[in-house]
Length: 329
Image 1 (cartoon, helix red, strand yellow):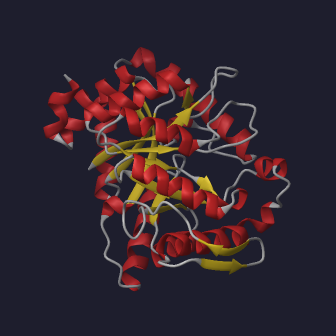
Image 2: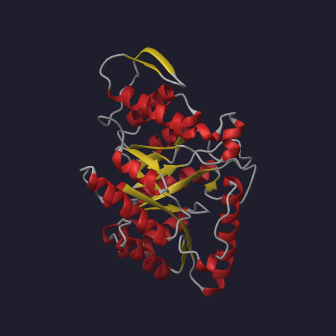
């Protein structure tokens, strides 16, 4: 099993939001994760939320590329319907070069209707805009000559995307997906898979099985680390801390539900999605996930705490990755 991070920084104009922290403290947090041997950092992208969430994810990742040594840096996700695909291809290739080939390109169609409304883009167009953008980006990264594209939404003539990415033919591509059809598409179209932090353990196991079966059906080699599973982390060390952890979980889930305009689970005591509990309880939950094929866990820490990372590395990770124990001391 390997561990990474999922989340983003936040400006200080608002408090209490799902997966964010102030920019400088967040940078310190990722640098500590790099030192501790965490494998990935996947950065969120959101716009016009009023919550100060990361909007320019690749800009922040480029800064982190200069501050870190080994941790892979990914987007989770670039919402392609909002972006010029050629400019995104150029930014991503530049980031891949600056990071020494440590970039992971996570993409998605988007799901928050208020964000689509802010861009004056109908959410009903998300799929077709995503499909065309992916077609352009793949061509931009794999074409050895100039190319032209004339689609429904985008037109490019005699285009040459520079620089080329360091990883060939391009950085690993990850798709955020939850429905069975979207998961099968990820397998069929060569994407790795990002699973969300709100799905139950049972849902995660089911989705991984769908993805693995779909990979096998198209003859694509499968490895469990091709699936990244986001999990909220709230580690406690006494029963006195449990109720406060539940209250934090309720607040986080409530905020996510408000921003997504969707209804989410209400009883946190029965919620199997978060890694909430003592180190022993968290290890048990992780072993349950591992048995179901989830071996690439992306931690969502509401506090983005370097001390919390060190505690996780010291008290939980040795049960799965003993060699990393010394780094946490």
